[in-house]
Length: 244
Image (cartoon, rainbow, N blue to C red; front, side, top):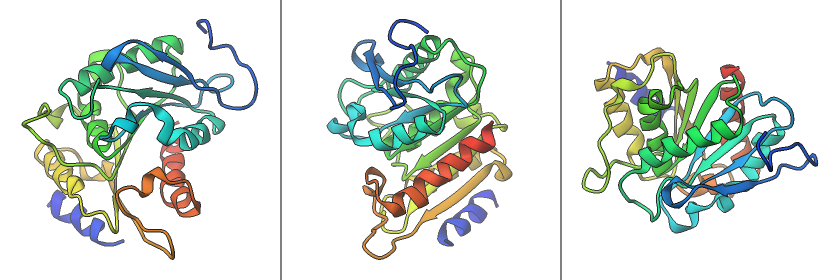
């Protein structure tokens, strides 16, 4: 019943280098090595939340360059951001282990502020964001919310299969699909969450619509135009605000 209901919804529509400086968001790092590498942005003053940003499957995603405008928007809203590299090369094993190491190190560098942790992921990172929520207790954190954007399907030949029973029922999960995105990872995630008994009232399905010259395809999340800000950035802002 959970899967059917949500599918229906889808069919509808500090340490050195961390001192406060100028008002413009400042990218810090990279810190760490190899797959444990991460980048960091610190909000001015105490952050309202810490946002973990998990990238997609592509060589160009191994640095934050594709997502800097969105990350800087989050920082201007008062959030600190951690961007884990989580792999040496795209698609390799160990992504969650590297993510745990990077997030734990990033939180330590931020002096572990007592604020909500929110995870946002795109494509492969969209699926990993939910899987990270299932294992985050290993570093003594429980994400308050997860935004999974255009999640990709799991390839068990190349990646670990994660038991989603570990996702806390207190975590709010937003699954986002694009009107012109042919990938079916959200449906797969819904099935896995249903099998794990995740409560339906903690799940939200969002459909990103194509409008005018804006096409809600798989790569639309990499853009920065008005529709991206309205249909992707604004929902994340609201999700973070609810987590406070």
